Length: 401
Image (cartoon, rainbow, N blue to C red; front, side):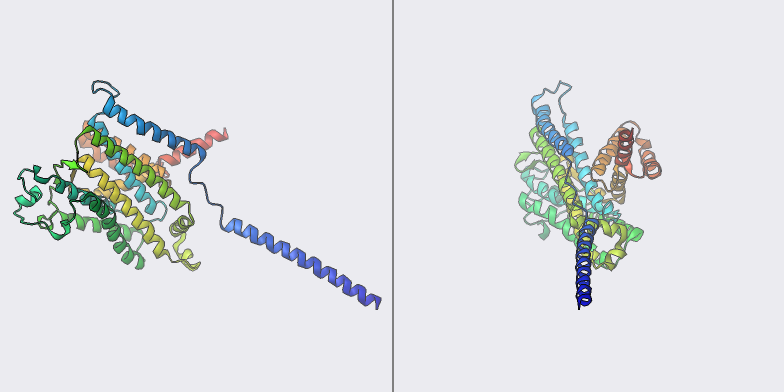
C-alpha cells in the first residue's frame, strides 16, 4: 500500500515536472520562433537621418526663395533661371530613379520601360498647359497651335476637361496607373520574368513612342507640346513660378522617399523583398506574388508619372523622345550607380550621372555616349553596390579602426 502510494506520488511529481518543462520549453520555442521568423520592423529613419532631413528641408525651403527672389542677379549667390531649371529637372529624374528602385531593387523586376510612365505623366500635364495658352498662341485659336496647323476643327474626346488643372492632375495619376496595372496583370499572371520581362517592357515603351510620333494621335507628333504660357494662372517663366515649381518638386521628392521607405520597411515590403529573393519558395509558403508585384509596379509607375508632370512645366517641352528606350536604360544606370535597393542611392545616382551628363554635353558632346557606356560597364565590375555601397564599406572600415 505504501509502496503503491509512493509510486503514484513519484509518478505524479515526474508528470508535473515534465509538464512544466514542456510548457516552458514550448513557450520559449514560440517566443524564439516569433523573434526569428518576424524580426522587429526597422525604424523609418534613424534619429540622425531625421535631423539631417529636417535641416535639409529648412535650408532648401528658405535658401532657394531667398537666392532666386531676393539676392540680386549680379551676386554670385543668386540662383539663376538656368540653375533653378536644371536643379528641378535633376529632382524629377531622382523621383523617377526612386520609383524604379522600388521595382528593381526590392522586387527584382528590371524595367526598361519606365520612361513610358514618365512621359505619360508629362503629356497629361502638357495637355493642360497647351489649353492654358488660350488665344495667346500663334493662331489665336481655342485649339492648340499644332491642331490648327494640322487642320483639326475640334478637340478630340480625350482632350475634354483638360482645361482644368485638377482634372489634369488626376490624369497624371490615373493614366500611368491604369497602363501599368493592365500591363502588369497580364504579364505577371503569365509569370514572365527576368530578361524576357525587361525586353517586353522595352518593346512596350518603343511601341508607345512610335504611336505618339504619329500626327493623327492628337499629341503634336514629333514636336510634341511646347511654348507654354501659364500654369495655374501664373506666368510659367516668372521667377516666382519657377521657384514654386522647384519647391514643389523638392517636397514631392521628400514625400516619395518617405513613402517608399514606409513601404519597404512594412510587412508588405518584406513580402516584396521575398519575391525578389525566392518567388518559388514564397509561393510554396502560401503567398500569391501577383498582388504584391502589381501593387509595387503600379505605385512605381504613378511616381514616374508624377515626376514627368513636374518635369514638363520646368523644362518647357514634352515630345515622344522622352519615351525612348534609351531614357529607360539611363534610369537603370542612375539606380545602379547610386546603389540598388537603398532608395537614397538612386537619388544620388540621378544627380551624379546627370551632373556628369551636363558637363560632358556642354564641354565634350561627342564623348558623352562613350562615357555613359563606360559607366554601364565599370560600375557592375568595380562598384556592384553603387556609391552607397562604397560609402557603407568605408564607414564600416572606419568604425573598425
